[in-house]
Image (cartoon, rainbow, N blue to C red; front, side, top):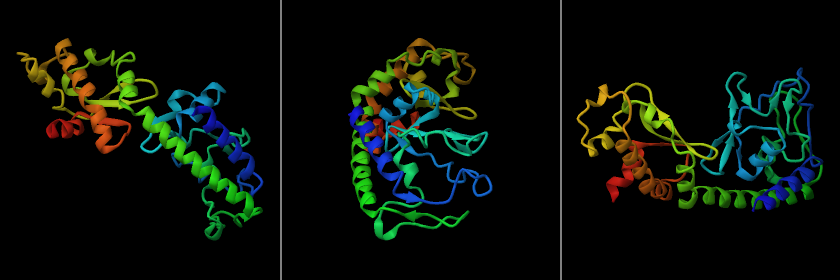
Length: 261
């Protein structure tokens, strides 16, 4: 699957590069990367390739809701993490592996409804409609296989693997009222910490019949930790099956599944 995704991306790049022409977006007098704050969905296969090539880090991606990941945004510059200020454009543009969705925004690939307008300059021109038809077919296949990859990434087997991969080593160092749930990352789950005081962990503290006052407890005990882990082992995959996958999984959301059981 990984090799097929990369093959489709490379083929798409080769076809689309010579099919649509437009203004010189690298010219700062025309544009300053106004299109580059969109968090584009990417499969793990493509994100892994970027990391292997030294073009990205794992932290440049967040778990997605359609594909396995989305490209993160650089909140200091309000641009995509791949926006290169020195280029005034995308650092992946000439790599041959630029994400397909980045190429087709904002023109689209529907031949009869192509968006030729640009708010900054004269707009885009379609050079080869036959190539655009081929590109659209590749994009359709790409989206299909990326969704298949994402469903595998969020299967029960893979979820349990990430739950037990260096699982939550920081959890016992937190107070119960800090914890609101789990956040999915590249290869493990991290603790989701909320603002203020959360009652989520009380669900597990009550099960171990702890005599410590909930809001005065200084750290999560091992029995409560085990209850928390068992809860996510039991319900997370069921939750994803019913409500879809995402980045954050608050305790209160998973209790929807527990209440249905």
